[in-house]
Length: 367
Ligand SMILES: Nc1nc2c(c(=O)[nH]1)N[C@H]1C(S)=C(S)[C@@H](COP(=O)(O)O)O[C@H]1N2
Ligand SMILES: [Mo]
Image 1 (tube, helix red, strand yellow):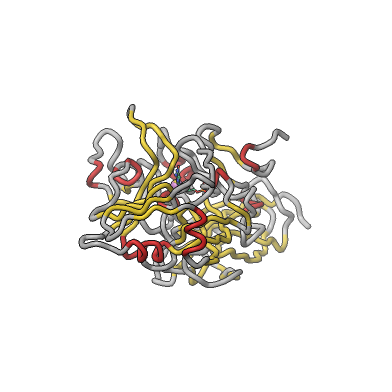
Image 2 (cartoon, rainbow, N blue to C red):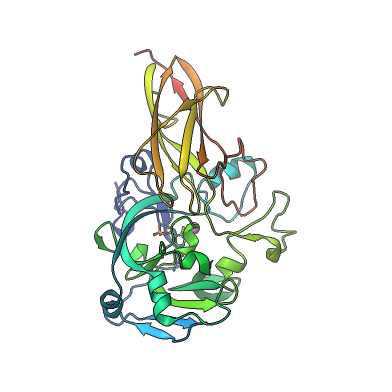
C-alpha cells in the first residue's frame, strides 16, 4: 500500500492531496476513544506551513489594553499548562449524504470521517486575554493562521473568530501538544486553537495572531464560507450577509460498524458508532433502529459524559437473513433531537448535517 503523507495511517482516506484533506475509515475511527494522531482527520485550505519553533511569535492585538508578543518559551513559562480531551469536527462532516439528495459542487464530499478526538495540552486562551487586558468594545476574538490560501484571485491567511463569551470560558486552549507529543505540522505545529463544542474551522492552526475585535472576523472563512443558508438558496441567488455565521456544532450521531460491505452472519450483531453534541451540551441518549426508524433500541454510551467530547456507543441487535436499514439518532442534554432526513437542513455549502444516520446492511448467511 502506498505511503500516506504527513505520517498518516496506510488506511487513511485521502479526499484531496493539495490542499491535504482526509480522514480515517469509520471502522478504525470507532476503535478508540482517543483517535491516534495517524488516524486523526485533517482539513486544510492551503499548503502546510513549515514553522521554525525558535523564531515563532504569537501576537495579541486589537481591543486590548496592552498588545503582546510571545515566543513559545514565553508562553509555556508564563501560563499554566492545561490537559483536556476535546473532539474536533468539520462543519462539512457527512456532506456526502447531503450531496446524495442534491449535488454540491466544489466542496469536499466528506463521509462521516471528518471528526476525531484527541488529548490536548496547552494554555488557556482566557489566561492570555487576561494578560493583555480587554479594552472597551471587545466582543469577538479573531484567530489568524500562518497558512495562505487563495479565493477569487486574492491571497490571504486562513482565519476566523469566536464570540468573546466563548473565548473567556476557559475551555478554549492554545494547544502545543496532541496525544502527548508536539503537534504534527499538519495539525498546526507549533501552536493551534482548540475550541471544543465549536465547528473545526475556528480551531485555527499555525496560530500567528489573536485579535480582539468589536465584530466577527472579516476573514473569508467567517464572512463568506461557513455560513448556513436555507435549502432554497444556491450559488446563483445567495446574499452572503444573510447567512447565519456558524459557531457551535449541531447534534449528530453516526453508525460506524458494521460497514455496508461487511455482511455479518445472522444472529447477534454489534453495532458501534459515535455521537456529538454542540456547545456546552452533552449526549443524553442514543437510539438505534433496525427497521428504518419504526422501533428503537437504547444504545450503551461509552466513555465520559462531558460537553465538547464525543460519545462512542454500542448496541446489540438480533438480525435475521435479508436486508436491514439501520438508523441512529441522538438526544442532547438540552433535549435537542435530530431531524429524520436531510430535506429541511440541506444547504448549498453542505454544512451541519444533523440528520439521522442510515446504514443499509445485508445478512447473507445464517450463523
Ligand atoms: N490555519 C488554518 N487553521 C485551520 C484550517 C486551515 O485550513 N488553516 N482548517 C480548519 C478546519 S475547516 C478544520 S475542520 C480544522 C481541522 O483540524 P485538523 O486538520 O487538525 O483535523 O482545522 C481548522 N483550522
Ligand atoms: Mo472544517
